Length: 210
Image (tube, rainbow, N blue to C red):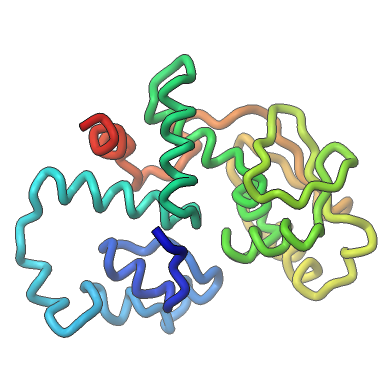
């Protein structure tokens, strides 16, 4: 499946909930989902009254999670296969792999306003992990890893703003941020309570198990 290149606000409307794909805009009155909380298209409002089949519910949940983490179909399927082969609950392992992606870590540390922006910054080689430059968004971090904005990139406006945001906004408990050093640390691996509560991973597992 090709990568979505259209308006991302339509994705939130299609999935029926706010996925925070546009960063700060999602917290303002300009948010399209808040103004039009129904699927896009001519018959969007009428579609709200239609009852979904079990397959439809499973599909929509899979699509929601995939789009939330800004992944293409094959990428997401590969994460599911890896989770299914890993010891532990498949759904939990899947979410853990997604949360441990470097682009998601950059987003969680408030170093970028959205996962899409974080992915671009990582690709453009703005970060290092444990002192080594990493430009692969799918890089999986581990407990104890240090994610740092490269010294020669710190004067960029986006990072100056990000550091102010990082000082004011709380982050997830399994991460730690030091705005003064432009650095974040993975204190531990995320548990289920640390991950998005609006995700029903059991529906994703059921989708791929059929």
